Image (cartoon, rainbow, N blue to C red):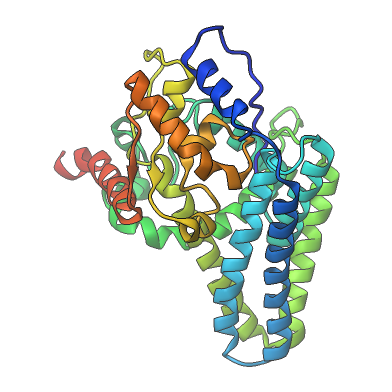
Amino acid sequence: MLEVVTDRPVRQGSDYAELSRRIRSAGLLDRRPARYAARIALTAGLFAVTWVAVALVGDSWAQVAVAVLMAVASTQVAFLGHDAGHRQMFRRRGPSELVGLLAGNLAVGLSYGWWVDKHNRHHANPNHADEDPDVGAGALVWTEEQARATRGFARWLARRQAVLFFPMLLLEGLNLHVASLRAVLGRDADGRFRTPMRHRTAEGALLAAHTVLYAGGLLLVMSPVKALVFAAVHQGLWGLYMGCSFAPNHKGMPMPSADDDLDFLRKQVLTARNVRGGRIVDAALGGLNLQIEHHLFPNMPRGNLRRARPVVQAYCAERGVPYVEVGLVESYRQALAHLHEVGRPLRTG
């Protein structure tokens, strides 16, 4: 759900400045309000249909199938929050934040402010182990240094992380909810909030409303046991879908260090990969399959990313900048191969 400032100064004559001029002259940074109005209506309609289905199916084990559908709908709603955070829909902050708060906090229970802060740092320094929170040491490790620093269960996990990667994504939904709550409420030793957040009170209220409406809606129409199973299937598959949408983008790509001196164009292109596919892949992955274009122009409307692709690809060829694009299965293979390689010292040491 992210808000990344992209109107940053670049030096005259830089490679990025010339690419930006070509993209702007092609009108690819122009907002597309009608297209987004249709996308919002369609996605909100799908989300609403899943809740209508919950009510109609009632106290039945067929709710498991509804939970699968709701996982898809929830991820599509989260993609809308992502676009709003990047101001792909609106130029003004107010409408963007409103959509982000409703899509993130209220609809799916994910803190918009926390995600904005986290994703800003990712976009500023993608795949940088010390600067990008997406490749910081955690349940997974992304560098051999991180792997060697693990102890106990974390070390056991790091040895096997490639095999366990997809099963672990089933817990990502729970992790996102917990991280959101900690971001809204968490304070440091001096009593100051750890995560910067413009609308903390509203975020807390919307997260609380989400929890009450979600739990209450399930318990109103089904038994506690069925409600628990529904939530487990929904949240597990939502986390899996979210993880599978983001994993192909950077995992296994070069990880620059503080010693590397990369300009903006190369910092963004060299650390990202695109996933091949047509409009169906675009819809399934929320446009994140066009990751190179997205990282170069985060506020570009999702519908323009595919149109920008040949412009960016040709420009990278002109400048001799490697432009990586692979199939979806190959993207996962490369990501898993990286995770496996990082854990090698723990398996052979």
